[in-house]
Length: 237
Image (tube, rainbow, N blue to C red; front, side, top):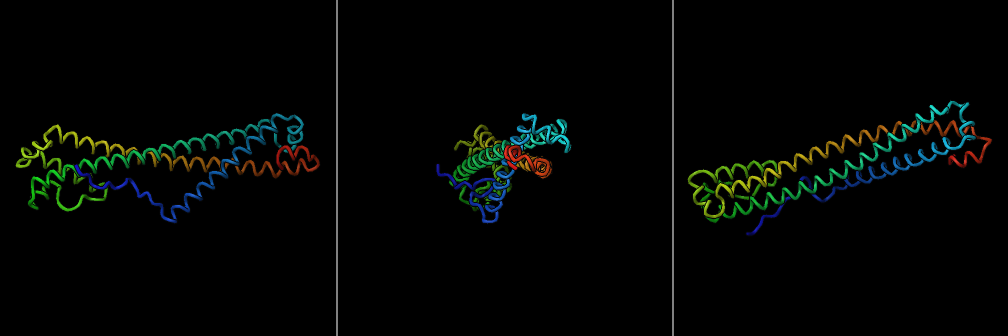
């Protein structure tokens, strides 16, 4: 049967200019955070592994305990960064699944509408069966309209006629199951995007704490190691 054009869900594939700029901004921010996490691990690893550098920095307050505190911030930032990447990936997968589920639902409802239109040319009947005009573009209105139409198809005087065309109880239950899958996909997408937003806040907070700690460490280390160029070079100062 001919299918109706599916409306992508949950958003258009075209990215408006402001949204594209925001994506680029976030990508640049991620690179900055990633670079800091890597650089911090390297610097702290060098200090901890090099007794001479450690001894030179200890009088400035960078005891093993303080260095461990910095390393803990670095590890927290790394974990938050990893969680953010995972959350973004899951949100992307959920978006794709949601779009497919809506496409399947629109095809299912489109097929039903064409059968109903073929059987019932009069406007009142088509209205009752959700087969008049165009299929709603709004996802929520679309789902509500389709479910109401399937309910109407189970009732007299339409049930006996549509049952002969494949829309008996089993056929309608199958159609409803497609919409149940769409509801589940939309719910999963909302959950995934919420988790992605939360992960962004956690990542940025962890990154800020690490950046503040490392910024102070580098300033102080630059002063303490002023006369030790080899140590400064090892730390990238």
